[in-house]
Image 1 (cartoon, rainbow, N blue to C red):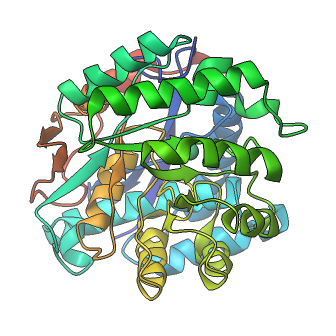
Image 2: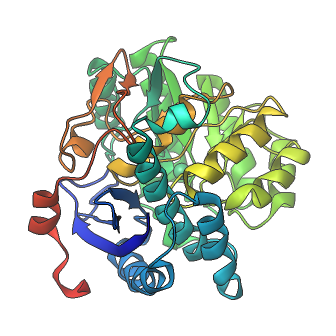
Image 3: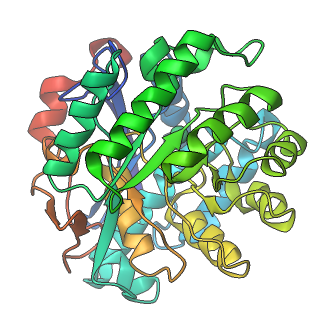
Length: 386
Ligand SMILES: [Mg+2]
């Protein structure tokens, strides 16, 4: 079998994401066609929005030329070919995102070629369903945040994640300069989490995302202020470049840490694990290197008894690919998703996704077990990319 075409799709999504005043985001998928009629699907979808997505689409067009004629079943070899070809551009970010999209699509093809779901090729199920954690709409007031969190729990979520500082302050990831926060925003954010804990009760897990926005003393103070509300983790306390900053924060907070959405490949997770810097790791299957890399990182983390909890702030292939891997991973906590009803993802797909008791159900269909709806893609393609 040979790869005949790599076709990136840049499309607008069906609904805004959870950020305050968020614009309608765009998504990047990869269609890999073969000379035997099988098609595999991958995803990249990166940030910030359409700027990054347009750039990655342009790069994917070049990768397509590079991979035409390759055997799609030789996944490991193709992964290394993509990864090593772009190391002068860096071994993280765009390079690993491209490797991820290709890798996921090739696993999809391999599963279809062999007539089995990808999780069978990764060792088979160690669990029947994939527990999720989910988000709810940001709001500027404590009352509305509590109402939104309660609504997501009422829809069936057993674990909810939010960034109360971003919600209260309208902050964003492009803001980081000094890593500090306005005190009134901080106080409102703490009141939001106090209110949410009181409203949802002790049995619902509450996760906090700091979005890598804080310097060391600020991160320490924020984590300590939220500790009384039994938070499951405090995610990305500081920007990802400094493991030393993470170590300093870790030594002075009583809550668990999760990092990894901005770490790329097993090579960047190893020092985090070796230095005991995080209680959870959260690689993103569409950024860190695909299904192949997520499985390797999971096994690496298993040797430290650290659970993985894959990051997903993008589209449906992300969740489908992540689910295929974590079905086979013993050291797994939860898979990230937007809303527990999963309607957002189903809008892109030929078959709707199904959830039960806050957990994703994964079929035994071959490959990823689902495919993107071409009618949706054609109707929502961002026009100036092709
Ligand atoms: Mg995050």
